[in-house]
Length: 115
Image 1: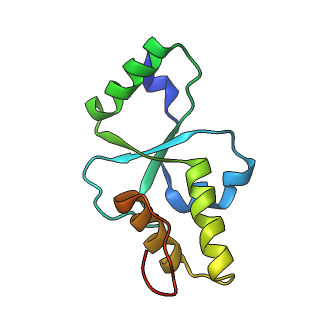
Image 2: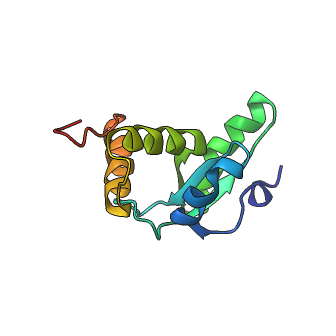
Image 3: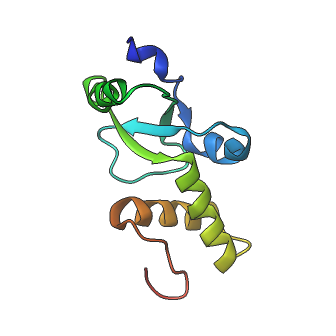
């Protein structure tokens, strides 16, 4: 399979976050060198429905084109939901902190204290 066609064009993370409720289930990929995710981080979406063999091939492809898997849109939805429960009027900075904590520690942020 030609995996280059499985990935959408790069868009800033904030665009995916603004429209995630209307998008199909998909994974977002970011450039390999990204250490800290920001609202403007370029992301490429990928939807794959295929055999386990195709999934294995996909797992290897992104790195060959300078990408790494970030999170699925449903994980971003969970992060936003958790943050909104704690702080209904959260800022973009709060959201980026919550996303980065989740990516690095696989934990939801606790805005009252720690993770």
